[in-house]
Length: 174
Image 1 (cartoon, rainbow, N blue to C red):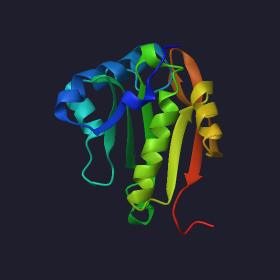
Image 2 (cartoon, rainbow, N blue to C red; image 1 turned 90 degrees about the vertical axis):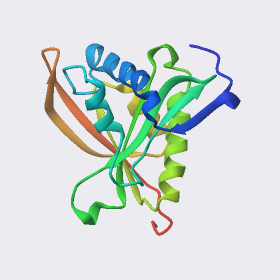
Image 3 (spheres, one colour; image 1 turned 120 degrees about the vertical axis):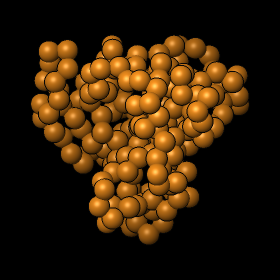
């Protein structure tokens, strides 16, 4: 695990110039893990569609350490129907060299605060059942398991579960 100076960690809104780095991070997980259920590596155009959203409240941010992209975190639409407008999905991807350095925790805390300011009431993380580190992270940060889908994905010849973790963040949540 790398020693991180968290005072140097910055979050910047996703910009076109960061796409190649973000694509490399994501495609590492595509090719080598069950963290994402994407099987074929994405192109720049496909990545662009994944990280830029029509709704300005749904944003992706890069994590920068000494101006190097070390990960990204974002909010996306949970469901297309209007009644879900104040619920967002959260996704985090950290560069492999920086895993275990607690950047994921910093990213969740950052995006949760951003989501709160945008008026979201609930955040949902859909996590591969094999991703014990991500499950532990979200539990530690107050997310609770709200769903467990059994054998809904298949990758690398294995049937995979998905677990959803939710956190209620709105001011009007009791």
